[in-house]
Length: 218
Image (cartoon, rainbow, N blue to C red):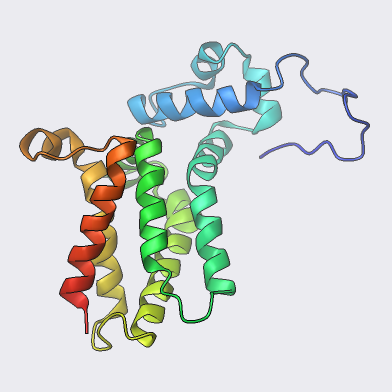
């Protein structure tokens, strides 16, 4: 949980606020993402994360709270922007515009730019007994899944997708097509010839959307 410092003059140090590098919070998030994705929630300590970031455990406590709060902050830092775009599109959609392609393209770009995120989710969310499954489900998956389903329904109303498709199953199919190349990359990447380099993601996203829309078109 991020500690707010409103009500103080710029540059003034509040009681208990750590001195030093103003980028320490970003470094802690970067290192935590790497360590959690490599070793899992149980496999890494805040002491290790702090040391790798050139900080102290007290700084993690100040900026985030406990270890679980840090994990949630890592997910929010990585996935928050695309979820915010999704929620904005749901609340105030442009007239007669199908927003589903724009979201899928942005989501796939985000995964390409943050390659540790799929590994993070596989380790602590999808694996049996995943430590952070409930946290991810309530804080991220439920928001994202329902948001994409709303975009699918909107595309159906606009006549871009068949009206007889089940929106939940259509959403499942589309998200599976968009996410599996990243989650399955350690194996599929060695068998199939595709690239997850950021400059190639537009090609992959276009293929995914073409396959989905042509298979589900009116």
